[in-house]
Image (cartoon, rainbow, N blue to C red; front, side, top):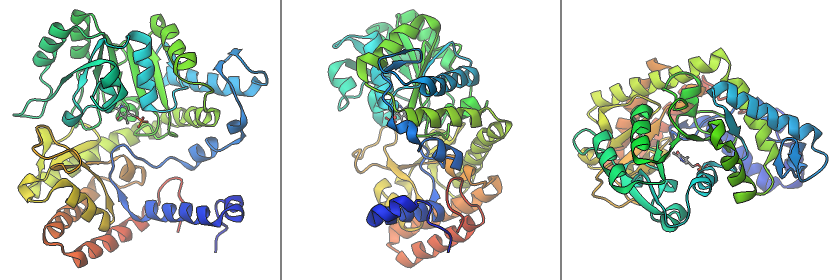
Length: 422
Ligand SMILES: *Cc1c(COP(=O)(O)O)cnc(C)c1O
């Protein structure tokens, strides 16, 4: 038997230790297709679980409210320098606790409560924090929302422009959580300029693709770039705000002292490490492989008769409308889970069903690509999905169990980064 990976945790709290071990097994044996998830490297796990956790460091490198920051200042400066180098930005703030607080800081920097802000509607693929009603951003600000065209599932830039010129939002968000197509940052920038809006490119999902050159960068066009660090960028759970020098002060002040207290230094170290990894040639290959796998998977799904929103994908993500298969998204997602394939149910644009019981599922290739699966494996993945959705329609549990064992068999040959090898 190999040594336990968290010996102190096991000795102190066996109940919790067993849950962590169970999660390691689950992540090892299931095909994880949630597009916002990934496997971080063992090095990221190590970097983000250190005694840096013990430090309070309100302020910024060289300008702290606490003494004893000799090492912390260098860690944060390293993360900032690496972010600037990797994305080619003038300024980076690596302190936001996660993507949602990063976006809140943007509101604090550029708008006042009641101001009009504009983003993509949540059910069209936008994020809650882009002014959607149930979010603080939609209740404290006046959110106006754009969507995609019914005919082709693509953003109608003329409609976005018309709305922006009519509403003159303080902030215009582009980016989202369920957008399978390339975002035209240049088009958004010209609309924002005409409307007098601050353009925020929220690249939480695609930051790793941008870093690896597999998606155009918003940096030449957006006033602010907001991103999480834990999705395709493959770092610890956290976020960054990047901007031109002219907005640096406003952004920094908004994050601290505007919104947050002490930065999570252990996470900052993990971000520094992830940015280092993302600057290596292997990460460029990774980013391109994520997209190649998504395109191969989309093609294989289309061959099996699935409806894909916008007809396919340009990035890491596929949004499937299951209406024609006669299975609601939630029923399919739960059946896929029993089959060892982890996805999330999702609204599709113009969904006639409710958000908690929508018509679609959302899948993506960041995690399976981190395990080394290639385009050659995507027909098999599409087959499993197709069989599982059919089995869901017939409540055929033995069929789901069979898929689960086939999935585990394939994955055993592709150990995941950061996990114990079985
Ligand atoms: C994931 C995501 C966020 C929020 O990030 P959290 O870390 O979950 O708060 C914000 N915007 C977009 C576009 C996202 O995809």
